[in-house]
Length: 113
Length: 114
Image 1 (cartoon, each protein chain N blue to C red):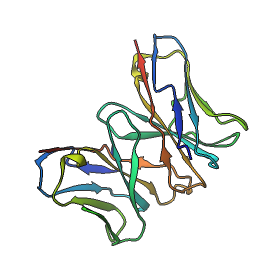
Image 2 (cartoon, helix red, strand yellow; image 1 turned 180 degrees about the horizontal axis):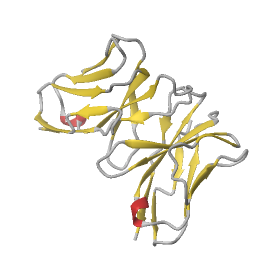
Image 3 (spheres, rainbow over the protein chains, first blue to last red; image 1 turned 90 degrees about the vertical axis):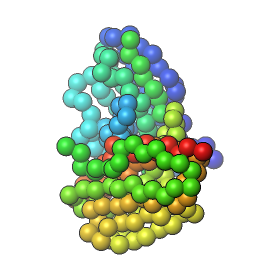
C-alpha cells in the first residue's frame, strides 16, 4: 500500500527555467494539498485540489505558479520562470475526504541556481 | 504574523530529561495535529486532538488540547536520542470551510544528546 509519492526528490533549475513537481496521492485518495517549506520554517499551505478541480488556491503566488490534478495521472505543481526565492521543499499531502487526516509525501527539494 | 506560535524553536537536552513544547494561538481550531519530521523527509502524523481539554498519550509522549481549543502542548518524558527531530503543530481554523487547509507552526527542533 504505497504512500504519497513525490518526484523528483531533488530538482535543480537555473533562473528562468520551469519546474514541474509531481505528486501521486495514496490509493483511493482524491484530495491533494501542496505546501511549501522554507529553511528553518514550518509548512505554508499553497493549494488544495480535488480531481480536476482547484478548491482553494489562497496560498499560491499570483504569478508563475499553477497546479492541476487531472482525472488521470498525478497532481502537478508548475513553477514558471523560477527565481532563487523559489528554492524550498515542496510537500504534497493527500486525504480520503475533505478535512480528513493528511498523509505527506517525502517532498521535492527545489534548488534554483 | 504567525497564527500558530511554537515554543521553544530550538531545544537541546540530555538523554533522560523531560521537555514540553507549546503551540499557541489567538484563534480557535477545530482540531490540532502534531507531526514529526526527519531531515529530508515529509512530516509524519503523531496525533490529532479534537476536543477541548483532551489528553492523548503515545508511549512517552503526552499531548494536550487546551480547553478553549486555542493551544496545545507536547510533553516528552525521559527523552531519548531517537526523539531527535523537528516537531510541528498544525491545525484547521474554525470557519475555514472544512477544506482541510492546515496552518503550521514554525516548528521546534529537538536535539537529544546521549
